[in-house]
Amino acid sequence: MHKVKVIFFDVGNTLLFPNRTKILAPLACESRPTLEQWRALERKTKVEFDRGMQDGRVDHSFWQTFHALMLDEFNRKDPRRQDLLVELVRNTRSSANWDQILPATRETLDRIATRYRIAVISNSDGGIDKVLSRCGIADCFEAITDSGNVGFEKPRREIFDAALRALKAQPTESLYVGDLYSVDYLGATNAGMQAVLFDVAGAYQTRQEARVRSLQELERWLEQ
Image (tube, rainbow, N blue to C red; front, top):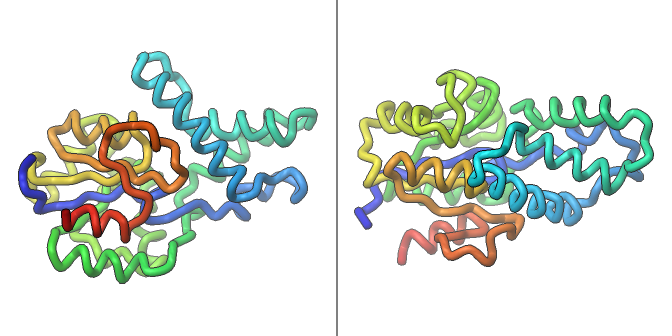
């Protein structure tokens, strides 16, 4: 393993988290999952999505699967199911609705940035820089590579290559931190980078790959 000089971060479920109130607005309050129920759905979706990606048979998005499972569990008999699914997926894909930031995120990034160059690679809609600015952390990063601007989404190698070019960084000396195995971990390692799973939901507890559950845990992992 080469010495890490540059760390690239995913955004969704790594630096910022979904605003569930905004995303779930189409649903009646009593039909909305709790945070723990949301994370249970996330774990289930990741297992299904990763398996499909590795088998080469996925033809739908992660959030399409997630919200279909959610409606099956919490809104099974709602006659508006298809319309709700479309609206929920649209809400979740809007970068503006990913504005929840955990305490001490800025402080931890600032400490990490004293030892490493840091940047962002995100599958988004071209507006993730504005959300990061609104949350007070955009200026932590040397570059923000957004698939909505680049034209390629993870796990395509082109988006990782674009981010590496922006920093003139070598892939073997770069680490990617993201929450989805088939998209983030495999996408980065296939581009020649090192990678670690950011697993707040606990979807990858049985996997052998490097895994952390918080930025503070990442900071400790980097010190090893």
